[in-house]
Amino acid sequence: MLDIGGTTTDFVILENGKPKIVENIEIMGRKTLIRCVDSFSIPFGGDSVVEDGKLKPYREDKALAFGGSKFTLTDALNCVGYEIGDYKASKNAGKEIFEDLRDAESIVESYIEMASNAVKSVDADRIIGTGYLAKILTPSIAKKARVSYIIPDHSEAVNAVGVAVSKISLTLYARFDTEIGRATFNGVVEKSPFSQGSLPDDSEFIVEAVNKAREIALSYGALEEEVEDVRVIYFNAYTVVRGGIKRGKIADVIVQIEPGISYGMMGQI
Image 1 (cartoon, rainbow, N blue to C red):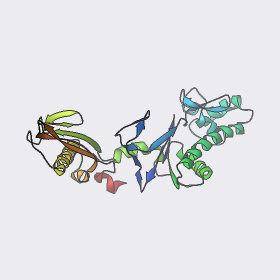
Image 2 (cartoon, helix red, strand yellow; image 1 turned 180 degrees about the vertical axis):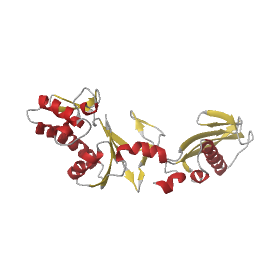
Image 3 (spheres, rainbow, N blue to C red; image 1 turned 90 degrees about the vertical axis):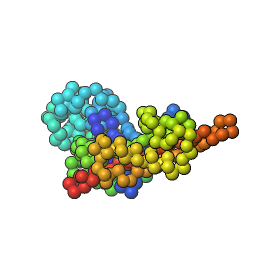
Image 4 (cartoon, rainbow, N blue to C red; image 1 turned 90 degrees about the horizontal axis):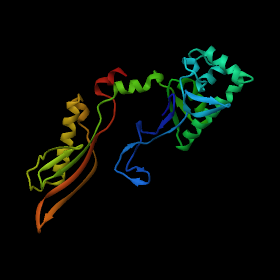
């Protein structure tokens, strides 16, 4: 999926209809326990400035077509025949920048080249175009990358639609320390559900973490059906031994209610 925004174009890899998730990503060469969507961006979008006959990787203002002060990729599209916003303002400015308005095609082609190379870099079979300029640019990107494409209804506002129909998702990081009788949920310390000094089974720790994730999600307004499936992402536990005596156990559990479409919206989309 590509989202053509004003400053960037974002790419999210989908597998089996869901965003691909990467585990234990590296940040500045250091491994982490972070689990996130596999995505990347290029620093070009509809508001990217055109200077010295080239598309620049930054935004300074809105397009002239939308009352801004800078000639952008959007304005270049108007110069080659599209009618986005105040397209006449784009063309008037284009006459001062290009000897022939058709020369603006090179600006558009440079963007299409970069976007199509990004698509090819992940060996995609199909792209889904979203964002205000998706209907205009996605077909050309797909053709250049030699893939098929889809432009969904309401593609201009797909982010807003996504927020509106999304169910509540939640990742819970839980630590249980039965030696001192304490539990920590996403950094908030609470009384442990286990008695001090007890030695619960691994499954008992997992059940408590899952139940806590469900409790929190329900308090945020999630529906009962939406919290039934809680995934265990990480688990580790060990026994605390002091003076040759087992004093308790410490367990780290990470569980997640994965993102998805709200059950309440299923019949409306």
